[in-house]
Structures are given as structure tokens and as C-alpha cells.
Image (tube, rainbow, N blue to C red):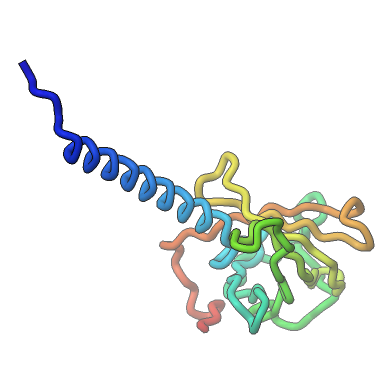
Length: 175
């Protein structure tokens, strides 16, 4: 026959259970926040560039740190004849990305707005950016570039670069 637990023992167990739950929720929140953070290295949808997104002053920007190919974004993936003939390496592709105002001032941002540069046609577009982990645990960076209203735009999906991807010394920018 077991003896009933004393009130202090039950109280300690209840507090321990609540603390354990709080720690678990905090860990889950930290993982979600990290998954939604666009900072890091990304491979463009065309597979041409590896772009590192990092703070640039008060905003985020993305600099091409590796050149991986020279394919057009047009259907058929023909070699690209870029209007901008400057070397892609070191080029600022994303700039002035700031968080979109969220309802909760204490919440981490999940969407940013800024500008994206298309070196193929030499134009800069307004752009919304967010990270999606739907169907891809490492995450996809969704970039919606547009002119005028977001309704009139196109979304690109960039994949997070592998942490163990080899660097090519002749095509890598180091910060």
C-alpha cells in the first residue's frame, strides 16, 4: 500500500512539471524563431549564386559570396546574357530589408520587405521575403519580387546552402 504524498511533495512535483513545460515551450519557440530567420547562406532559384544574408546597418542585405553557374532564369535555362556585366561575386543582390510590422511588438519578425536586384535585366524590384519550412526542414527563402503592387509579381524559392558545401577559392567572398 502506498502512502499519499504530502502537500509539499505534490507542490514540488507540480512546480517541476510547470517548469519543464515552460522550458520545452521556450525551446520550441527558439527553434521556430531560428527557422524563420533569413540570415545565412542561400542558393538562388536558378542555382547561379550563393548569397549570404546578414545585417547591413539597421537592415538586412544579401551579397553574392559564390558563383555557381550562369543560367538564365527564363525557361530552358540557357546561358545568361546579363545586362549588368559586372562580376556577380560580391554584388549586393538584396538590400534594405526591414521587418514588416507585426501586431505583437515583442514577437520576432517573420516577414521582411526590401529590394532585390536582377543582374540579368539590370533592374531592381520591391520584394517581400520570408522563410518557409513547409516540406523542407532546412528551410526555403521565399522572395516575392514585384512592381507596384505585390499582386503583380513573381515568387522565387531559394534553398538554404549546406553548411558543409565546399568553398571554391577563386569564387568565394569572405567577410
